[in-house]
Length: 344
Image (tube, rainbow, N blue to C red; front, side):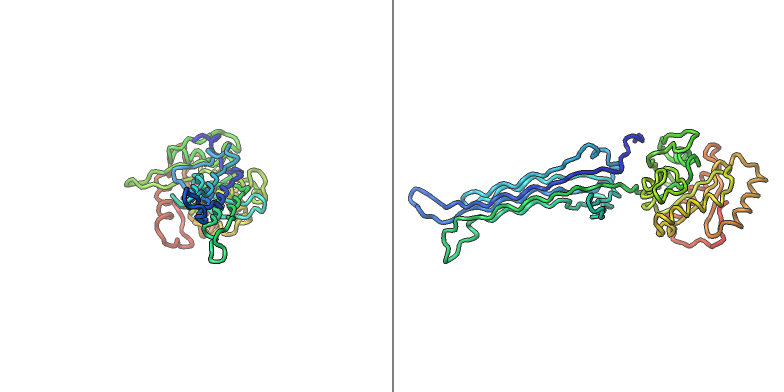
């Protein structure tokens, strides 16, 4: 998927179908002048349904679908014939899609399971025909119910990327490069900030045909939680990741400070983000000699408590196997890390 085809926010007007009218027909035949009421019920209006599809990764197919309308129910007929139901419209969306009311910004529901179906706009109920209103005191009712009106919504569909591991870091920290060497994803890579403007997903192949999904999220800047830079655009995607990989380059002025800024932005956006498993990875370590690397390890061990850290180089292919092992362990082994444990 190219960056331009990744769409994670669309606005749509949806309308269900109105219910068909009930019939007020009176039965008539050649030798039966007053056969009584035999009007049928109107058909149900069509629903607008949202359905989860694990094969979709973007809302691009809905980018130009500004109006979605289901079919109207048919009117009832004679001989108690029921009108046909209106045609349902099913909108397939990727897993992780959040549905909001455009007017109130209220979250209506979320689609998180493959094949999950939720009615977005319920079709109007068909009206009852006059057959239903006959009684001993009113044997020839000449009235029937109209169909119920359709439901109409202005909604926002918002995609939160579903991935096992989310890459968190400042612009130009090497996230796209890491994703490109661990997976078959081909994100845009260049030596300037904000190369990545849309989330990129890749499948990391692990041992014995196992795999997990990694997401390269657009870089953080200070103040992102308040909407600065790409702001909430990227932060909502990190909410879905079970493990957060903090990527800080080895040439950073202060690795601890950069990590703490990243952590603080997540905390200000949503404090629950701090409950996720975290791993600090120092990238571009091919720029360090062994003596400097040992010194940096000792410094991080003293300054950063309660989180494992590792050194890697995506370009020189250093530490990548150990990184995959560590991530797989964090994703699949439900054990607590000792407070002073650190990666190699």
